[in-house]
Every structure is written in structure tokens, then in C-alpha cells.
Amino acid sequence: MATFNPVTTNDLLQGDNDLNKTTEAFKKLVEPELIRAVGGRFILVEGSDNNIAKALDLIGGIDLLHLKNLSLRGVGSRIQFGETCWETFTIRKDRESGEKTEYDKRKQAIEKGWIYPQYTLQAYVTDYALLGFAFAKTEHIFKMIEYGACDIRETNSNRIGQSSFYVIKWRTMRETDCDITYETF
Image (cartoon, rainbow, N blue to C red):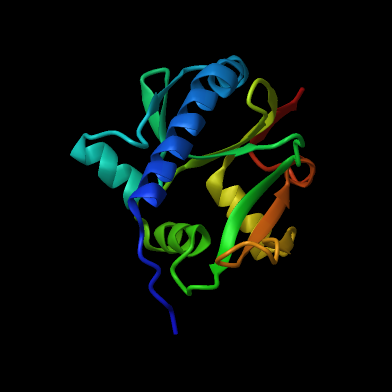
């Protein structure tokens, strides 16, 4: 049975701080290299006050819009801070609380024909540098999971609210002719 953990004002402020830090890292570190690699331009959806943007983000899982050659597609984004570029996509598989995960939501949207991010961006950054990023078709990431071409990792045992993640290696995706662009620095 799922338990309820009340959210405090500090939790909400921490969420805002995390979003601000991620947004700043995207704009300063990731976006210039991503544009160089895939072209076009990007519009941040996550954190917008616009109702359509909120729906795309909170329901559709779309954090960015990629505009290129008068075309538009949604992008889900995960930016991880640390000292290592793991060269992997990580998709939350399950939560100790039993709440729906990114995997559950995307899989359902793909199967049912609902809006979801057509592409997924994963970037690894320090506070000052981009270590690496990958930009891949979301369906191809999910096919890697479906075919078992991934690992499963658990969060550290000292963390509150345990989760497990599918871990998909960028190199394996490239070797299986998936639609992926990635660079490490």
C-alpha cells in the first residue's frame, strides 16, 4: 500500500531550485552543443506558466520543443549533475510508493497514440561543464528495454523512496542502428 508523504514549503522550494539549476545548465552548457549536433532551436516548456506548456510538461512529459525546418517535435529531458558521464539513458522503472513512473507513462502513450516526447535528451554535467549528452528517438529507447538490451539499477539504499531504473547504453543503441546522436567531452 502506498503511503502519503506530505510536501513541505522547503520541498517545493527545493524543486524550484532544482528546476532553476537544470534550466540554467541546459541553456548555458547543453543547448549550444545540442544545436551544433542536431540543428534547429529549442524552446523550454518545463516550468512555463502557459496552460498548454503545463499540459505538455505535466501530462505529456515534454520538457522542450525542438524546432527545425518549419517542423516541431517534443523532447523529454534529463540533466544529471555529477563528475561522471555514464553514457546511458536512465528511465525510471518503478517506485517504492507504487506511483506511475516515466516508463509506465511513456509506454502507455506510445501504445495508445497519445502525446509523448518523440525524442529524449540525457545530459551529464558538472556545475561548470558539459560532460556528454545523447539525443535519441524515445521509441528506440523503449525498444531497447523491450528487447532486454538494458540493465536495471536500484537507487542507493540510503535514499528515501527507493526506485529502480532501466539503464540503456548509448553505444549499444548506436550499434543496433537506433536513431541516436551522442557526444562526450
